[in-house]
Length: 292
Length: 200
Image 1 (cartoon, rainbow over the protein chains, first blue to last red):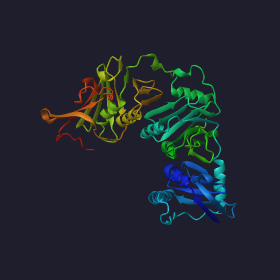
Image 2 (image 1 turned 90 degrees about the vertical axis):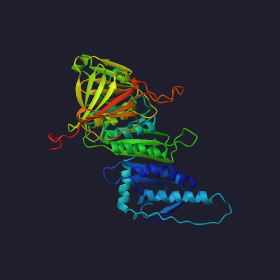
Image 3 (image 1 turned 120 degrees about the vertical axis):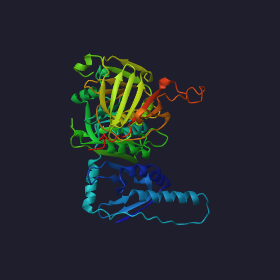
Image 4 (image 1 turned 30 degrees about the horizontal axis):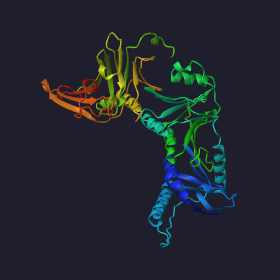
């Protein structure tokens, strides 16, 4: 089992400035899964009820001279502490800025060891790959969040009110968030959002109804889905925008099995999706919720 | 609207407020412990929020009708109802999104006898019971008086004005017209031996 690659300057910046701060919010440790073509950071795919996050990079997005070999189809996975990796990269950048400018200076080598777990066994790697394949299913309808900063500040305040968030997404482009307890109902609705995937026309005369009524009708017509998730998980999913994505979409997976948030990255200076980087999260649905 | 019998009658109160942050500040000032109930009393003059503790401390927040951009009061008797102060404050502060000043509408009663608050495309409802704590911030002035029988009265003024950087030429003394200030009063009774307020 061997792996050796050089992180490019772009790769160091991408991780240090954007992805590691975001991924650190998902959980301190994660799996790093290396294949012939990809490096993938995975949170909570094998264990438990936490928020799952999948950050996938084509090898060229981070590395050059990428070499990997293992008896398990050239795949290696292990657990890594993100804050230690982050610290190592930060120190590399510091060294760069202090010594990098002067050409013809002294060459120096600084070695940073980032501890990792023992590599995952063959069966665990297979299980990880299976979980990853499962996690690639996209919801039929996705709505685009217009302003992540605004949503973050809103949910940050909302989370004082209750623990369980009801999320409804319609094919008309409505995102309805609601916290309900025995003492309070607090909700926010974002309408006329951009829709990816299956869409439907807004029923006439809907505008005079309350958000709750409209959402209920849309669910009854099969034009919407609704799930309950933890407010904390939802807040974490918003914090992914530390990775500076260009846009974000929420959608509910088939049969209401999870709430998915997909982040898109553009090739700098264009509106074209950068396919070499992908990031999405899956929020577990709380047991009580109604899959309709 | 949902089909409910209550909706056919006009509500006791519908009012609109254009500065939620001011009211959040005012109410936060009287929120001294986590679980705290309050009583709201509605009248033609405005809204009074009353908080009491163990028969020794009472605080009142007066939100005069002039604070509101709209105040339609149509009840005959003065309606009183309980709310959880903490939930009420947390709820209101949800709508203090920085850079988005909007009008919030209060309605009582809602279809199910709740206090109903609406905010552009956002809406919320609040009913009775529990809370967290915080202290007085940004008050405009306080007054302490000791009345007959040792009753201590503490008054605070909290600004409920719209942040008005738009008129920099107006006097710099920080003068606030009375219509833009919420009055808060605490009444502290000295503990009397006969009163077994702290007995459980």
